[in-house]
Length: 134
Image (tube, rainbow, N blue to C red; front, side, top):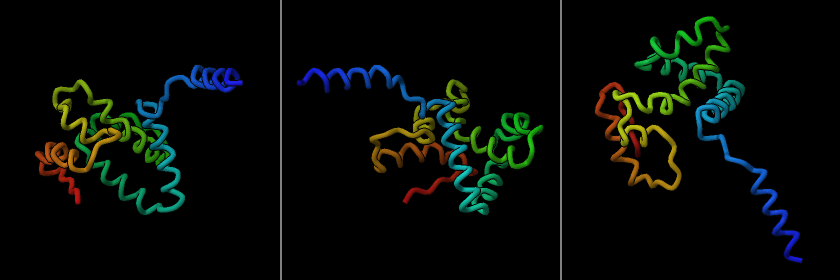
């Protein structure tokens, strides 16, 4: 009697494979979904976020060349997608690969707000990038 549920659980675990939501492709997929929902429900917010992303220090060098040939709506969507994977892209770049900076910019489950505040303060070293946690 116990064999069937155990066998079913084993098959489910073997078939599941690794989750891909938290790699570059997963980040981009989630950003595309968020963009689509925001565009539908709050288009003014999309415009504000795009304007902020266009002031990112690496917009001209890293993102603009990748989106230049796209139609405007495609540019905005892909910009969201590129920004979502940026913490992964700069991992290994000496200018950005600080453990505290990456931790502050990247989702880490099971972290409390108390633990997060000191990490964000490392990002606040650049006065152009002030984040305020309440």
